[in-house]
Image: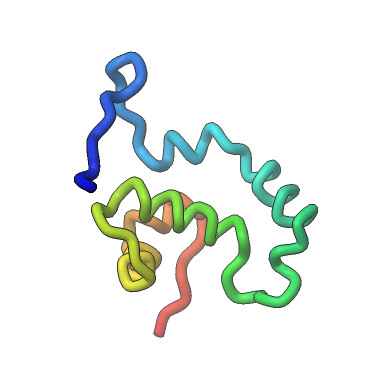
Length: 88
């Protein structure tokens, strides 16, 4: 099935950063705490993973773990999560 592009609401386009600003960090952190998703994994927090998935969905035609890894290492992703990814 071909992917169809939707027209933006009110004729305006949103960037990933603008979309993430609509969701407060406190809400994402509270949801992660309530669901206890960070219990076993300490290196990649749920808030960062949520933002990575959202960023990858909006910026990529095809979504895979390799694409998500490339997006995680992309300098444009750093401002979305307000952190600097670990160097290899």
